Length: 299
Length: 222
Image 1 (tube, rainbow over the protein chains, first blue to last red):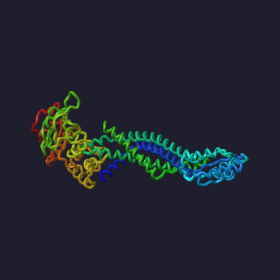
Image 2: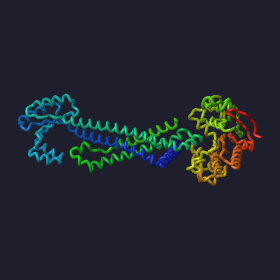
Image 3: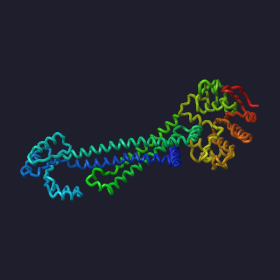
Image 4: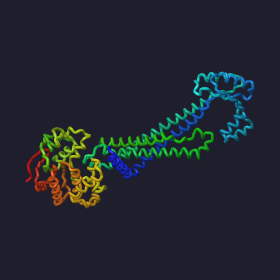
């Protein structure tokens, strides 16, 4: 299609959109809703992935001591960790240091801690690993050895948390794809219906165009563009709404979630993801147009 | 220019819309196909524009067998023809200019050239002053003249007309036929289907009479 013909087709497509406003408004709303749903889950999983990344930056084996553990028992455990080739550095955390770090992270819970009348957090040692991606087996071996030592109450490996959060991110992606995909399928059907009605409404014009020698491309072009424009605009509005939600949520709603704010927050979409929503919208609109054209012209 | 060679057409069994039709229309000729409704006149035009294919036989247009034209190239065949129909087929919400410009826009002609050609075509049918009106502002006769302007605007070598005077009173019908005669004098081949034998008698041209899908008589109109 030459530039001139593309320009004509574009003008025709805009004309179609203007003529059937209500029909197209419904298709547009469904498109926006579908891509908004997909975009929100994407934004949620962006946030979960960011949290997982932050956690995995300081992968450490943490040894928690029983309240009655003696200084000697703590020293034995620390020595065992130091001897391990897996450990890069080791840091002892007193109950007071643990308490103040906890309150810094979760200031809302200060009253609850104060009401206990004592510091509930145990002393611990944190051993960072030389290789954050060290094999699970070798880390487990060290952890089992440490658990068997006297005075040790629990041993945790915080890479498990980042793995769990990553898994949550993947789950969010999957839910987004499932719901979003389902809604996108519905939106393709709705766009197809709207454009089909448009084609039927313009049947006399199409008959004349056939009569005067218009090619199929000339006749179909504006309808395809119509779907493409509608879909891309729907995707763009959805991307905008996701960005807005990410900002508004943090400002107004995020704080009410307290400790869960980190996990249930929305991270703004990257430029590539936003472009993906716009392109996805365009493709959905185009598929809707193609389905409508196929059905009408076959009959 | 147009050649039908033992053409048969059947839409649904057992009736034949056309049975063994053969005729030739030479370049620059004005030819009438007459016959009552259902005699097969419109089928001949539908075959020529390749809206349908013959069941048997051969149809040549400009020495090309239309059956051999691939579906994607049928538009090129139609661009070599101008078609005028009984119900005008104008778009009521578009201006006269836009209606006449359709065949030129399909060709991707530049806007300036489109304006020039549309004006010339409308001047030929005497409606250049109504260029910005819509079809609803015009009488039936004027609307048919607009349809004729649309048919001739890209200078086709052949004009096909299907009952072009069917909706018009005798005076207006005479006007339209005079216009066709004028277009024919400029070298355009005309094939006009009509059931109105009075019109045919008034205008010199070859007549092919159809009845129930068969050719009944051939010869010049009296």
